[in-house]
View 1 (spheres, rainbow, N blue to C red):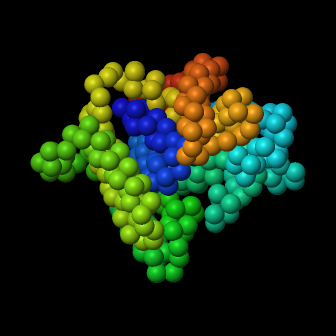
View 2: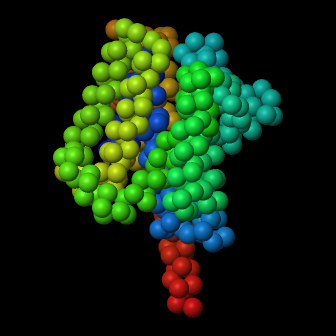
View 3: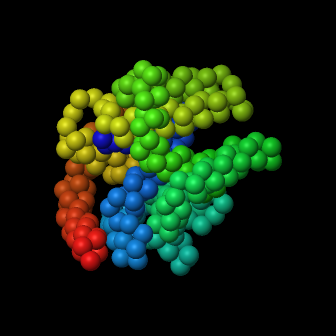
Length: 356
């Protein structure tokens, strides 16, 4: 029942980029995504695929089918905007949206791999937020290879992740605590740990004594984000990062609560899944949608906290909802059928192995 949570995070990222320009809306959301991914990838490796060669191959193939087809179509959409509106217009809207010119740049944009300590600084990126997907891919590979197979290993991983963050406060900067793969190790390890923690009924009993419902935690997550967004307007520096790490705690508790059958709102699993299917298209397409909408309305690519930016953002919400439905119907649903076959074959192989 993580669908509503995921799409809320995607909408927060969109609001940050296209209108509000309040950093917590974006940074808190991305790290919330990382926690969810750490949990889900660990879950499906343990309970759907397993750590056999065939299980790992099935996991990798399903991840490929989940991520790349929609990403490639989003990239083609961006390329169309560059050719139609011109690179001057698209780079004015966001600096990374222009056509690759070298084999390396084409490879990065096709493979969704932006190799750098700061992947967000690799340009061009036809899909600007794809730098975070590079980070996700890195941990998908490690989890597939067995990083989160044993809880003891996860504990060591978590401790090393915390040590990295502490070291960056001494020797690095905010950028080192947010953009690199090493920084994302903390939320991914938290997410992976949640899988094992969710199996411990003793911990669940202690959690219940907190009296924090799933809905309450969701509201706390939003309140924390908006409160520290306001604080960030008044001050800068390490103080503002308190909210960032509070967000990690709240998101971790929220994911845990959802794993124990908690609901943000009382809807069916099918409806929650449908809502969640909007999250990836929204994440991939919001910059392109903003460019197109603002250009159609105003004849220029405009975004930010202004009247024009606000109108463009509201219309973009409507347009991206329609685009997401199209993506889901034309791309995701047919591919989902293929992914279901792969999962079914894996389950059959697992059953036969057990019988033998």
